[in-house]
Length: 237
View: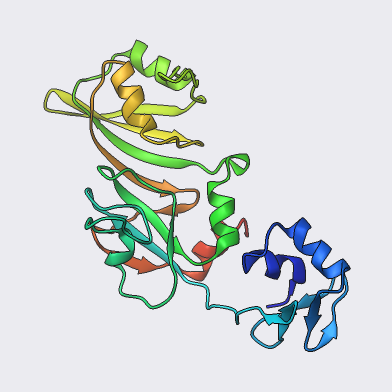
């Protein structure tokens, strides 16, 4: 696929797109042996693009996988200790990394991909992609607690969470399931909110990232996304 050279250089790890534009302006970039010009495009599956004589790697086949991360598995592509990672659960060749990290003791939907642009779009706060969770609370919340959660809660570090959609779903013993939809996701945010509201969190299951849903996947199961699902995540119709 044809892409602007500064985008290809940035994806290869040579800096921001703006910095890579300077490389082109300085005449350090060549396409098939010819000095490149700003605005030029190339297809890494066909063209040889070099920076200071060093060739960019050929384009990887883009991979998109939905995974049900179980509890007690790290949301990481590589482990730093002997704990299992989400990458260990997918026997597919190539470099894959998780989009939408989940805490070690949380579970549910994670997108595994090698598409850096999509990963940035789904995780950057300015895009505000929704994430939806089913949350099991040890106690049944009252209307005031739910209203406070919806408005936003000041966390222990002074950060006030953005308004969220929080609705009661069902009782479960002495506790209850609630459904939480939010556009942000600070580390352990749901658990901290629950603690501050007097609603200890027992279990968190993420069921949606943007337009992608967990569906019928069970813990440790995974599947490739359909073309329509990828298009929807990228903002297509």
